[in-house]
Image (tube, rainbow, N blue to C red; front, side, top):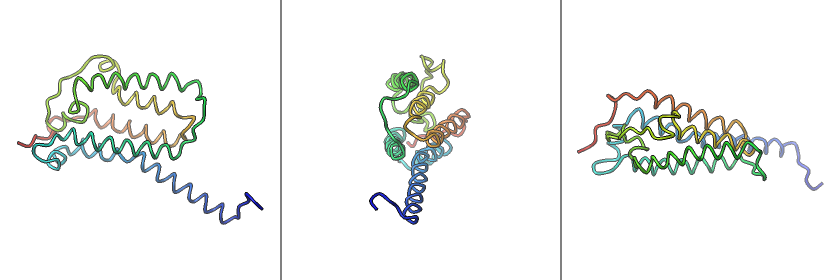
Length: 186
C-alpha cells in the first residue's frame, strides 16, 4: 500500500531523526568550547597565531565559520512557516537593534575590541554609549532575544541550548582576571 511504513522502517526513521537531533545539538554548542578555551587560555591562542598575526582577526574568522555552522544546524531542525507569531516582531526587532548598536561600537573598537583583544594583550578603551552601560552584555542579550523570537520555527530545546551557551559565556566573561591576559608576541 503506498505511503505505509513497516515497523522496522518507522524505528529506523525515528533513530535517524534522533541522531540528527543530537548532531544539531552538538553543532549548536560547537562555538562555546572554542570561546571558553580562548577566554581561559589566551596566551595559547596568541602563541598559536604566531608573530605578526592579529589573534583577534583570526578569532573573528574562526568565529564567523562556527556561527555559520550553528545556523546550518539550527536550520536543519527548523520548520519555517509564514506569518510568524505576534511576538516575533518585537523580540527580533529589539534583539537586532541591540546587535546593530553593538555593531556601531564594533566600528568604534574594531575587531580587537569585539574578539577578546583585551584577553590577547591589546589595550581597549571602555565604552559606555547605549546600549553599553545601560544593558549588561547587549550583544548576548540581543542574540538571545532574536533566538526567542524564532521559537515558533525551532524546537525549544535547541533555542535553550544556544541560550545556555550564551549564559555560560556571560558568566565566564564577567570574571576576567587581568593577570591571566596574554602577552603579545614581539
